[in-house]
Length: 115
Length: 113
Image (tube, rainbow over all chains, first blue to last red; front, side):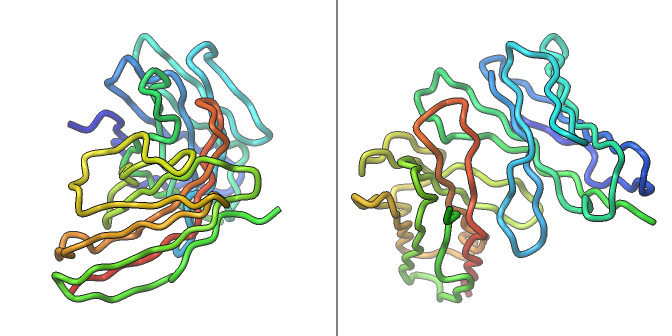
């Protein structure tokens, strides 16, 4: 039972345009959501997060949107740059479990930003 | 500020053997967790250590065990290795807060033959 789903395995976007990565979840107890970026041979790097009391969080070129009623979140990257080419993971946490480090990850979306 | 460091980077073991992976947490972080990432999948939570005790576990059998030391560094031990244990093993550290992101190391690539 996959509780966090990233249905697009890959995405190709031109440099300077917007990249939109999507994520759906099924567990209504999730209340904190994160996006990580992963380059080959490196560990995941934290990008941006959002708690369930918000519907939007911005950090520079990165914005995360949360739609709780649809159990959907998305990451927008504007403008996209070649260095953004990586695998992006959506992750979620339920804070009532008492296990602060337990994240449930999606399977990732490979973003390629072309020149 | 030193990030999360893991050793070794690569390891090859034979089915049935035992392996120990090591992790040094980021400065100021007292919670360590371990994840397994199989090829083409997202990381899966193995367990979390806080104050040198395991206090949360994912869907992994008891042959996966760990330790946390007073300096917050950690070990992951896997006994009776199986072919399906071949994966990238990631260590992550964080402050003990539900709303702090995890900071990951670069992982140990384990191959079981």
